[in-house]
Image 1: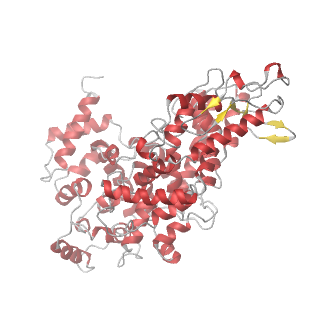
Image 2: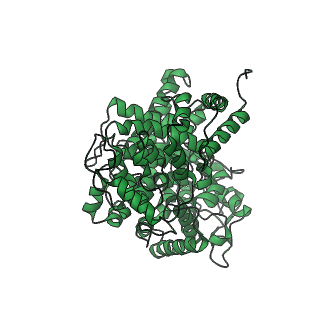
Image 3: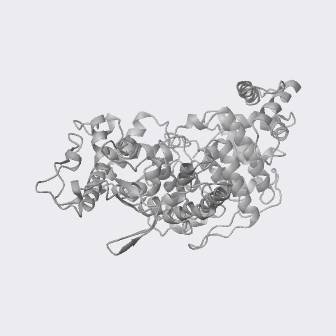
Length: 612
């Protein structure tokens, strides 16, 4: 570290102190020395590539922008409070076309706003208010119908993603290129960026944003880690398969039965590689067995279990690891019984499940010289496998499927999963009574439908007051970085909306902006697509995303995107179709429209846009 550089701790402290001053109620102006230190700290943090540290510092501290300094922090950081009548009168005055600035731009929303319930549906359950999306809501007969219809309609996203087998074809193409080297890595990286570019394209163009947000929840639930920034073969094998996992596992099953979804993940190569699922007796790896129980299905919180029902134990994990051992993901296509199976097919290894001597035994053979017992957690025991040595793999596969489905239908799954759904789409900060009432309602739907995820989704979006003005629910959920960046781009009107089920064709500028979002914006905000910090997936806690450094990065990103929106849509139009009817319920209603600059960026950073 050079003498002029700040240490990482010093840089963090400079940013924290500067942000605290700028966003205080008194909106203090930074001194020349403080500006110099902040600029140095931001420079070491490598801000997003299209805005310099000096520009970012100038944006948030320019003395001429008194209104922005005084209001931005309150929009971002303050608690929501009831609107005083004087604020409403002020908002009415500001919204009067005769007294407000009216830049040139689109005119569809210049003098009309979207109803609050529709706007809440777009923010909370969708991926941000796309231009013209209110027309889709009206055509569906209202926001609840619009959301519910997305659980049963044919998907308008994901059709051109490569499946798991095709992505493993890319991985195996390294052999004629001389193995793992710079050339093969470039091929892997191009495939990875292409697939996640398709996902981001779909996120900003789909007419089914709730369905796509629902798929994002499940991808995070299974916590599939992809590490394409680590230049080694295991990372490449995992890193390539993220969108394939979505296409093969999540999309076909996310509105079906929960046990089908869990079993599909169990039989996918991405999960096999992700959680060391290729494991063999007599000492099988217990990692995947543990995560099936702790993360994917029942959880380890006793409060999720019906009274008197035992929680799984370490012994349960050990037993389950034996039961699910012997599975491999074939990296070579193969034939079996006259049937052709593609690369990536998960099957039972013949060598791992064989009678001694590969012949019929005179007496029953306890596989691996042991039986299986999941009691008292599950009523499952198996003393022996059948005698037929040739078909032992079939029997093993049948028993594995039986056990996985039994676990996925365990009563504790409902409450464990429903709590996560509520935290993702509603809030992790609900009071105990509100959280319990909502959770109990969705758990009842789950139990009455046998774990029908589509029924749970429809019950969620139709629950009383979730789309209405209700202080128990309104604005409790702070958008995580992925959903905020997508919402900002989706709201920008910079991308066409899909028609039918044919993927939108983007121009080079649009594709470059999405690549910037994936590999610059989300990386700076520590929530990259296709990555996860550990097997639990990304945090669903507001506190983990609403940090000083995170908010500063959002301001910088909002400045970039806001400048692009400003070039084609007035602040009034953007305001009316993104936050108007939500903001009228709050203080400082439309003060942003009185500013001389940075209106679009400020709206992207407003409390209403940041929260779902």
